[in-house]
Image 1 (cartoon, one colour):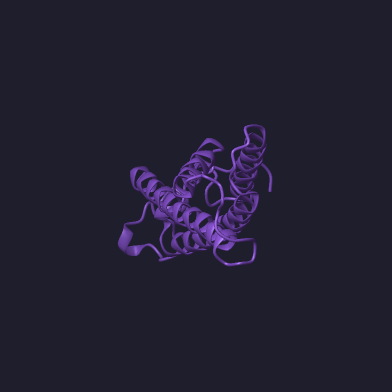
Image 2 (tube, one colour):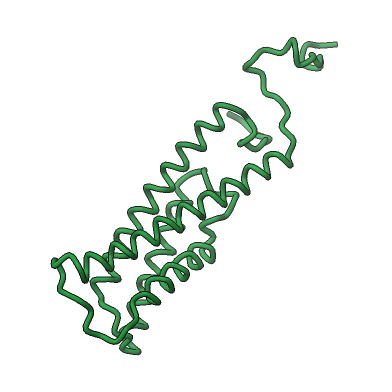
Length: 177
């Protein structure tokens, strides 16, 4: 037998040797991570929309109280929900992309900017009455917050992958170096 085909018991393996991780455990970790990302996104979006509302109507920087009959409590809740749906529809929670490369950030930015554009266009067409500064501040703060949140979650994921291999997928690489 060659050394490549020898199987050693776990007690004699070196600590740096890769160990087999059951795929069910890997999938469970991925689902938990995606749920965590969803919660982080939800908190960031809700905070961004609430901050946009406060800055627009209560800070004195962009005007005073809303003088339109628009119920902003429903606008805040609706915008938060639609924003999360937009992230989902643009595959911002795709387990094949989360934690790998720049595509995750592109999808989050694309979902946010497309939603902002869609709301701006439809708001203008149907004369919705929602303050433009409120939307601009909410989307600007939210996009920045989502990028920072995803970056922080990715850093945590990389640390978890270094700590134990249960957060990583096994891959087969074929071809020249």
